[in-house]
Image (cartoon, rainbow over all chains, first blue to last red; front, side, top):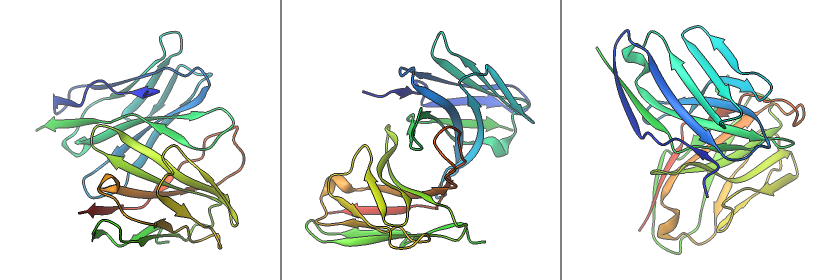
Length: 112
Length: 116
C-alpha cells in the first residue's frame, strides 16, 4: 500500500503560468517531505523540502505547502518555465530513519 | 567532485545470470542506498548503509545483496537475475548526522537493467 501518493501522472501548463503538483500521504510519522526533480536519463535531484512542523517553505520560484490535517502537500512553481519540464517526485522521511518513501511521480510539461 | 557515479549505464542479462552494479561517491558521505524505479511505482528502497561495514534491508531486498567495505563504494549484487528485476537502479548518498533532520540525498545517473 503506497504511503505517498501522487494521483496525477501528468500535468501540462503554459509558460509563465503557475504549476501546482500535489501529493498525499497516509503515515503521520513522516517528519520531512521533499520534492525531487528528474530529467530523462538522469538521477533525481533535490528541489525543496519542508519539515512537518512548518506549513510553507519557499525557495525562489518554488514553494511547498504542507497541510498536516489533510495529509497533503503541494509544490507551486511560479512562473513556470520550459526548463521545468521533468518528472517530479514527492518523497517523505520517516521519523528516526534516513530512508525516503517516494510517490510515483508527476510528469510536468511546460509549453512555450 | 564527480559526485555519485554508477556503472554500467545499461546491462542486459539472461535469467539466472549474476552481476554487480557499481556505485561510488567522492563526497565522503556516510549514508548510501540503492533504489529501483519501475513504471507507476516511483523509487523503492532496496538496501542501505549508514557507514562502512554496516548495511540493512529496505523495502524490496529479495534477490539482492550489498556490502560496504569502504566509505566510497556500495556495490549491489544480483545473485540470480529474474525478469522481475528489470528496472532502472539508482544509487544515492548523503551525509549522516543523525535521523532527526533531513540531509539531501544525491543520486547517481542510474543503471538500466533488462533481464531476458
